[in-house]
Image (cartoon, rainbow, N blue to C red; front, side, top):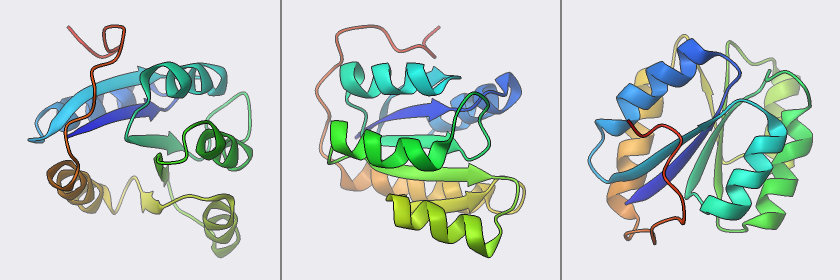
Length: 136
């Protein structure tokens, strides 16, 4: 079972991901945030299994955020999402510690398959202290 944190400044993308992620068996909790600062707070407090981050989130640099998140929570797995990756940005994300990279437009189904696989492989996560941001 996994807890997933989604960092994307697009409300439409967050809502789309929330709907798909809730339907995956083994996804225990989905939390949403739209800023780097909120992602840092949520990783500290919620201890998610996975974080999905948009490479082009406003108000900061995701490539600089990845090693900070991994330092806060070393077991955290990071998935970077983008509308296309250059070879340069792909290499920078991987060098920063990203575990997986997915193109939002062409690899969405592959992303969902990976998340379903991760949910099956993970033991149940302890519940967080607060309600998930994406909860009804």
